[in-house]
Image 1: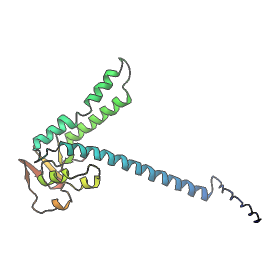
Image 2: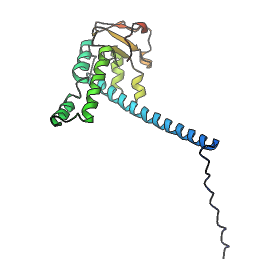
Image 3: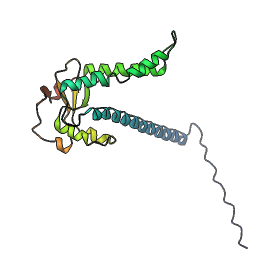
Image 4: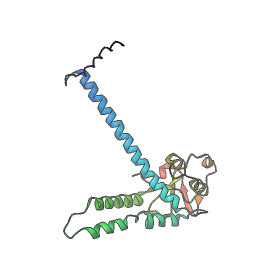
Length: 200
């Protein structure tokens, strides 16, 4: 008969005095872990939001060719900024007279207000007026944010609808050419960052 194995002693959990150096180190370590976890969560939410925005402009592209600057403004003004109108109307219709606004109604109104102000002062969008950029966007898998961020972006505003400012010329190999056009579809494209509209 095999001899019984000696019972292993369980290690006692170390307990530190609340004011000790070890306790302070543990607290700092936990705070650091919490901050890293929160930062990762915010990055995931940001990427998801960016995919939604890029996806909208991806689906707005025609099968061939590009949009004119006027068409791009119409897309932003009449489709992008009004995409929550139906949900807002439903929230308002469901609210009984005298009752406060629902959390969803407040959230949607805040989104519309923020985006309208962004469009007024200068909104950065994928450049759908540029031939090479449009072709590259059509190849996007609608998942990889890094790919979309390699493309060309312009800044447009409702206060100056005839001008589009190149805010990011793009670093995709197909866009890295010295002979960038200064005129796209009749709209002057300003590449000097000093001429850029204020970033909100």
